[in-house]
Length: 138
Image (cartoon, rainbow, N blue to C red):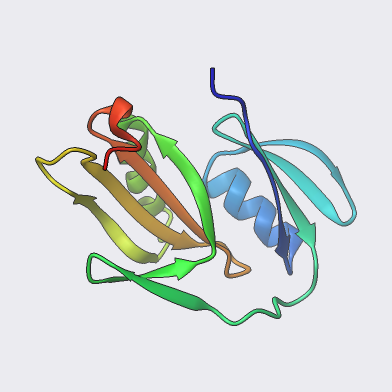
């Protein structure tokens, strides 16, 4: 059994975070206070903490000819969930850092991926695997 993870991350605007994670991504909101909000991201607890403007410099790593933002976080979805989310993001007018595409097509570990930024510049990756059992395929 996979248990949910917990991730706390900085945001500079809680209303913008609420709109993005709640309205755009469809995350159910949990507890909140003046300086933080809990969200249910596909069963995982993520917490947006009001922290002012980000102070870190964006870093990128080359993967398959793409400039992947680091750090980033996200979840692995079913292919149907991933496709529905990609469409939801498109309808919301969200700009992709890396457009939805399939990596390792026809190979072990075939996976769909996409990257977006939240309003505070936090990078998120959403993945889906053709075969869920191949998440750690070499």
